Length: 109
Image (cartoon, rainbow, N blue to C red):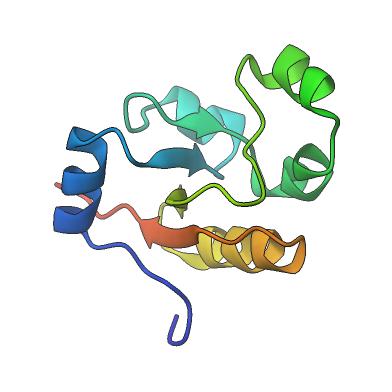
């Protein structure tokens, strides 16, 4: 994951405590249904590119949340091991998103 912005657990806790992070769980719906970080929005990585290109109203209708803005800071993508989080981070960067990062969940954290 070298070269890509990565968020540590302590950084994430600080961002969440201050309300300055937007979490997107890019695992499958089934994985997210089994447990996710409270407040995270689930957009499977397979849907992410089309989701980030939707009109804001269509995004809200489908995901029941505001669409991230291109300039939004602390947009954090996560998955279980990091591969999909990295893929999502690179995809967002390619679409012009500025404030992104990725992290992965480790058992027991």
